[in-house]
Image 1 (cartoon, rainbow, N blue to C red):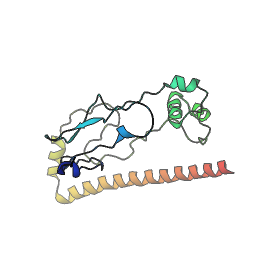
Image 2 (image 1 turned 45 degrees about the vertical axis):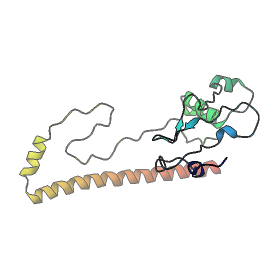
Image 3 (image 1 turned 60 degrees about the horizontal axis):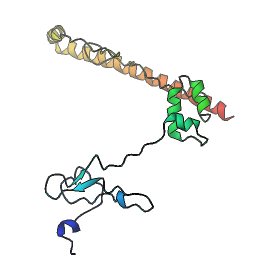
Image 4 (image 1 turned 180 degrees about the horizontal axis):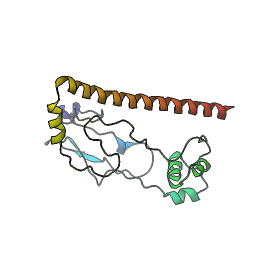
Length: 192
């Protein structure tokens, strides 16, 4: 059997969006891995005519079902890192997280803290930091007042807003530096 030019040009390189319709895709040869057991075949099929050269079929894609967290906790085997992360999600306090994973340092919290927005917004109205959708505002009054200003007054208004923004930015940078110094100090005490 002599392979056709289409088959000769086939490739197993990763199928990216750039290569999408250029050549015939052989697949990743997952179906012919060595070892015993049933083979489910390729997870898709080759299409010579059409836009997609290799189509994945949902019914043939391999699905691996693992045991639940209760089965992992009740087994005598050591838990993996994924089950540890699941257990950390179930414990509410950082103390419970440290008991579940003793490798955590004492200053590490299990809950991720979301930093509050401390920078003032660069606009006429502040944005709400809560999940409430902001009401539609009317910018007519602001634009009328802004257009009534002289060019020097406009520049002064813009520079004042920039000064406030930069002052807030530097204050947060100083706070972050202090927090980093405190963290390094605690790490140094923990190592001793």
